[in-house]
Length: 417
Image (cartoon, rainbow, N blue to C red; front, side, top):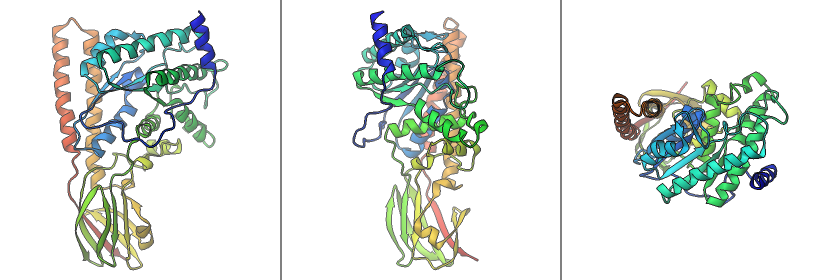
């Protein structure tokens, strides 16, 4: 009881969300990593985890990285229908020999009722047991503890005072303190989503409710906000490529993330070839879900920078084609200032979408496999099917990196009436 009261007191105090302020760090993932996302149904749905994998596959196609979704609907720090936490950790996390594990639990732990000290005590005990087992089984594993996404008490009236989201805030404060004690990274999904809902609700309350359609599970826009939040907490580099050309001098002034060759005058404009080392994210900034995520503060463009600047052109309008595909029309002033190609429909984005579709297939295979191994552990046919799915997924993960290797592209910048 004393421990429960102490935890309750601590959880009532203000706490800092996310990572502590430090100098800019290198990207948290690296070549050879095996990343497991552990959690409840919000992780099982996998939207935020898919964005992270899509980013890594397209931004670092030379890397050999594996991603595994270990989310199960209804899970708590003690487990759920798919097994207790000890079983889940051994079967769904440790078995993959992870080097990186994210943990997002808490939505179900609060019981969908007002906060009470005993709930926090049970949550803390279960969470500490998870971390202890991971540290014992995988010494040196890099942990990211994610404070639960919110229950929407912003765009809808709370079901009771002060609201279930307040209980999640208190559990999240404990996660922050535990992360500091364990020297684990801590990332907050609750505050960014609540801020995004509030920002959209000021103009359109109905639209704001699409961020958390059932108050619990994030929709596509909400998952984009969460994925972008995690990538930023992990210091994800924003640059895909950067090219700067002086058309008057016929020279390449700067090239980052790419090799530019064959620059020459052509049809009142320029032509050249680029051999990029990364792809843009598979995102359409004209898509309704992406637009809603942007309104909610995802700033996806801040993670997807592919600037092209061409200075010294004669006054007029120019059409940019890449591999013969029309990308956009720009004035010489716009080109001199620089355009972010990641915002446009390019062959590079098209290639990235093929990676995105494969990532989605992989998460579905992993979900079915988890159900098989959890629900039919003594069924030889089910075990064989689960093993076959795992083998197919391993091959698909290796193929995704190959599919993400950028192809050389021919650029043409042509004057138009």
